[in-house]
Length: 151
Image (cartoon, rainbow, N blue to C red):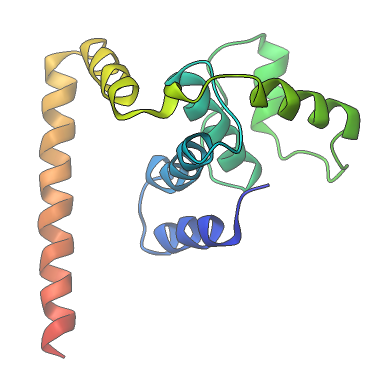
């Protein structure tokens, strides 16, 4: 269950018109914090990110379904889950398994390595356009901040 502040930050991002991946970033950040503070572990940064994205989807962030898995599983994941409570036995088993995992998956070094390898998988054109878009967004947020300060 995501923390209240995380959900509120994600809603705020949605109100500001930010992309679903930015909204989901709040849940991923929360998950990294959980691993760091020892609430549970993860085998890799990828697993911690996947858990965060899963929580985001459940909280209603409009993310595409996870790319791996069967077509039926993807279809089921993209639909709004039925309001049935999750199985107590299953969720307890999941959290116990996660507690047995290591904590180093959320270290700066591991996250940095993951980011680098993820970037390498993208084309230089894609990375460049993402950087340009980020610069435009930064510029827009800076100008709106200065406008607010003048009022």
